[in-house]
Length: 286
Image (tube, rainbow, N blue to C red):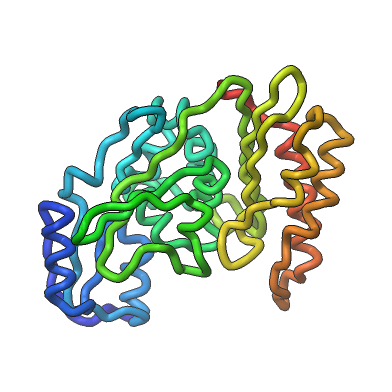
């Protein structure tokens, strides 16, 4: 199928884009990387009268350090997330997740903000944002607000972004001493959607875990914070016993739906195996 006819506009500013959207009474769509919206339009799941291209908006670009945070413009490409030295140092889970995202042709055009705003529960970047406790900056016609990643993702394909608003930037807190990260997923083939994936951020001081943040993806309707597994690790050494305790506690954190080809019990089992693998191979970043 092909998409219905639509008008195209390249916005020059965030306010310009939002004004155009408002002028269409919601009968418009924003274009970031295009790898979600274009297939949706081709399948006629969406049929907007106006497409508003965000590629030329300077406020949505750039990667910089600001007051203890790394600011990443929402139009940052996946390939930049994989290769940029500031992201590798200050938002390492984005760098670790990027090679798992689809294929090079998609990574070259897809945007970090587009992936986060799309909120696919099987996507890598949302879980990485939750694990790093990132904050998402949303622009509206009345100003901007920053929403913690835990509150940003609400349900499948649903976020804190209201109609007409634009995800402007992602803020990631700078790493602290003793911080380690790990990321992995299980997929049928490299580049396929993950059957289960895990993003972990741990701080260990003098062989004691003082902070831990774990997010899983493809196990529910949004990135899933592993509260029980985190509690099982806090205050302990990162060893076989604590890893086993975290794996056991993970079952209380997950409630995936049954799939005829992939039972919920199998997804929970794979999540436990993957969490153990990631915790046993954490990489120091600070």
